[in-house]
Length: 391
Image 1 (spheres, one colour):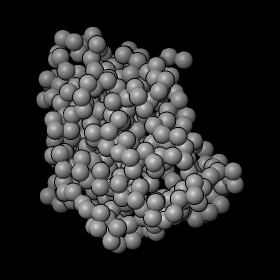
Image 2: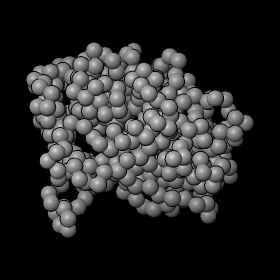
Image 3: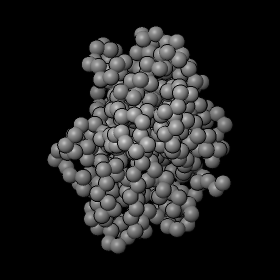
Image 4: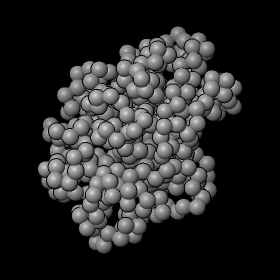
């Protein structure tokens, strides 16, 4: 199977500061992110041959075309639940790696706060082949937390100590991220006394669905070498999409995600990674809920299944630990603007790989993993992208 390794360079990135942006429209956020990406890449729109847009509540490719005045340039729209932004990047990277385009613009955007609803809209309902009614994401992942306690014999206190460490760690990291919506540390008392959202998940176990946009410029490595020195190379890109089998099958244990396991295996094979906990220098994972981060770290091989809670409490995933996870504050502090979320995580991987992460910068950056997943109730879409410093 052909892979992406060293066939695509990321030369520029832009991220709009997330938040409840009542004074900005979706075009404003998209323009800000795209303009910052082009400036960082040291190129102009005339150098771009195609565009790829990730947006969950789609208004079509014309959204990017009209915002950036792209003329008749080909633009494709990607939608893959909460993995939308990461999949848009992967789709664009395939066109560059395959030789169809030399340089393209990838963008993701979401205007959550003007939607007329709260949280992520859950479509569908019973009918056709559906056999159960949909539930809100906090309910699904609250059930995952309960199941984790049961499966691995944790007390409620042990679970909350673990999830609290994740929340406090990510807020501590978010203070150092000027792009984050929440730049304030939280204490243990604040965490443990927070209002319930879906037991045993409290307020600080859950991310916020807010407005945001992100964009990047990617091209062939031979072109990148003539533009700038501190670009990043794509080492692997993998996508696994579930078929809803686990959502109805009794064999599914709800303390792992098969799509994570499959995507990780493919990505590690592409990048030549044997021991991710030792070979990766940073990882961005989809911490829509703190229990997500716990389970994902096990699924991606950072810790054995059932022992991730030990690694968390020991500080293994802290910014100063053996494998820093969510050095930018994760979704907990950045927020979750669905279409832009996957690119947000990749932005941190790019910054770390290029040595541009400032106070968040890890020493001796090698390989930086970015994980994004969408779905719930046992069926997901998982995208894993791995970046490394230029050759």
